[in-house]
Length: 197
Image (tube, rainbow, N blue to C red; front, top):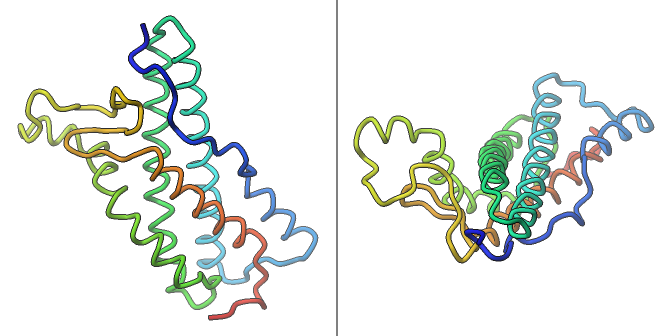
């Protein structure tokens, strides 16, 4: 019998991928490149990482669905955890770009309300991401006692990803990804002369 009986990760396949395709179309048909190298790099990297976060989430979710339908093919579950690790890491990178992009005078403006909302997600994503990235140090130092997960796993009710004492719901992850995708879609169509504060 599979460890979880259903996939409770919300479906995000309605969000179009890759957003980078919109960006390239804007470049080609509107000649709308950002002339400043730093601002251009911020934007391109944000879009690539936002695409990656959503792509990894969708892949992880698909693996969970396949696992639930299987005869406990544990490797499907393990592969899903790897995809979700990459998704969480990518979300954290996106949030850093959202924080730093507006500081550059040639970068596209980001709505302050959306920026505040995305900033509020940092407190939920960062502890999980840090536990994933630094688990080797925690194990060596003895900071992670027996009985708590030493690698990313899923709760038996299939609602949360967890590692160490940190947990994040699929509902929260999907909400963050929806907001990041919304922003990425807007920024992919940005034209330099449109910058407004």
